[in-house]
Length: 82
Image 1 (cartoon, one colour):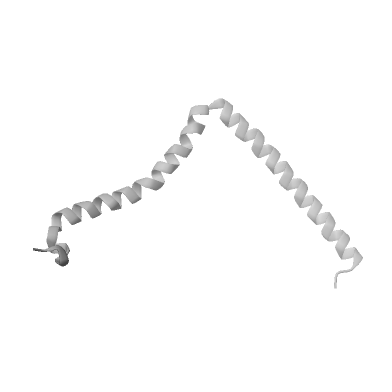
Image 2 (cartoon, rainbow, N blue to C red):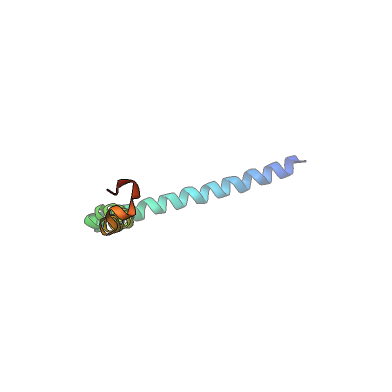
C-alpha cells in the first residue's frame, strides 16, 4: 500500500530524474550542434557510410550466390537439366 509519504517521495524522485534527463538532452543538443558546425561534411557522410556498411554484406552474399550458381550450372538444378 502506498501512503501519502511514499507518494510524495516517489514524485520527488520522478521530478529529479526528469530534470536530469532534460539536462542531458540539452547537453546532447548543444554537443550535436557543435559537431554539426565543426564538421558538416562528416556529419552528412556518416549516414551514407552506415547505410553502405549495412548493404555490403548482403551484396557480398548475393554475388557469391551468383558465382556458385554460375559454376554449378544445370547440375545445381536438376529440373532444368536437359
